[in-house]
Amino acid sequence: MANKVAAVIELASGELRFKAAQKYKDTVKPLEYMTYPLSLGKDTFHSGKISPQSIAQTAEIINGYVECAEQFGKVEIATVATTAVREASNMEYFINRIKVKTGLDVYVADESEEKSYINTLMFGILPEEITRSAVAVHIGSGNITISHIDKSSICYMQSIKIGGLRLSEMFDEVGTDKYFVVVREYMKQFLDTIVRSLPEKIENVILTGYDVNTIAELCGSQAKGGIFEIDRSSFVSVYRKIKSSSPSELYEKNRISIDKQEMLLPSLLIYNRILKYTGSDRIYALDLTAGDAMLWNMLQPQIYSSLRSEYEKSALAAALLQAKRFELDEDHLRRIEECALLIYDKIKRVHGMGKRERFLLRMLVRLHNIGKFINPKSHYEHSYNIISGLDLVGVSDKEQNLLAVCSLFHSSVLPDKTYACYDRLSLEDRILVSKLCAILRLAVAVNCSHVQKHESVSVSLKDDLLVITLNTYKEIELEKWSFNTKKEFFTEVFGVEAVLKKKSLLE
Image (cartoon, rainbow, N blue to C red; front, side, top):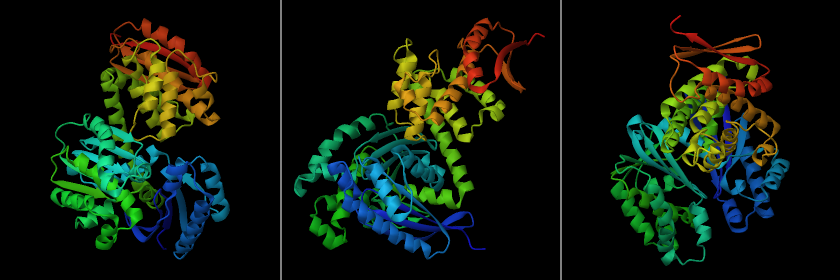
């Protein structure tokens, strides 16, 4: 029996890519890779929308890619779009026209999803000695993301809505001889702010993005196990040569097209700027895109799911660090999380949610009280605003919004459509918010005194009665009062009565 074949068509901002691969043992074996230099990003970043001509050309290229895929026989095809399509004001029309002309549905990945795809594979490929201490820089056509990695977890991540192609469009009228100076001065304010949040000693530098293949080739580096190792001195030498070369010289000497130069020049400048803040003698570069992760998910779902689970651990660690930055009590949060997960797991047959929702509940527990740093009064409103503005690891933009909305309703305010942020959600997402909030409210009530009164907690569900028992020798009158004010909403959401009991350790 032939191994499964899958293909991904990526509608990136600077080019359209086709990647076909085959399942082979415990890996993904590349079969075909093609690119076409169509810059949808130029349309979006310049005029705000994708032109009819570009839409027609996109459809034509996609149909050509589909024909290429069909040579492999039965093949699953996915089409994913990123920044240029995502930010286009006519995104819906674009998706519809592509569907009509090609028969394919275009999935538009949000910025956070794109980062999660890339980071999931990055941690799966890189050995632990590299991710022990590193700064990872991803430069796309429209966005830059800089992450601090410590002990194989992302503990800080900052995104800037500026990328290689966007910069090229912004400074299109600046002469070549002044381009580096202008972009360097413009980027300094952003990069300096980010770098101040990084520790002084970082061992490694990791690069991902559109240009890493070109940069690695210019530096004379060959990939080993999917990783390019680039000497710092080689990179700096290439940077200086590129910086002083004209577009015609770059094409004549290195066969770098004008389209590639538009992305390469600002990318080199930004990578070099980050490199100055580290003492690393070696750069690790990976040519990863969202499409690579999608191929793994299509061909090796169990392995990819395992990688995804590991990345979720990193996301949870990052969320806890965010909470600690806002001076929340880590022990208190862990007690709430323990109780929330006990409830979640015990009422599984009632709530109908899965592993991803369980992960979101854990993220919510760690972030829900973050607004108290601003002011305990109406802290839930501050929590909503802070979570909405954070660069969270491991969640999509939609999921981040759901976490923010949940934080608004975790305390005394009930989910209500008079709140615009709740009313804008789909029916399915409003129900999810209510479910997560109902569980969180009980877990918070059990720990409302902010001191550890119980030695352990147990949860049981019999028929339609949930019993939470605290094993303790202390009084729990405050917890019972708080619990009784929260349980009605839980019953309304799940149709299950809830009671809080005490089991004395002296008995």
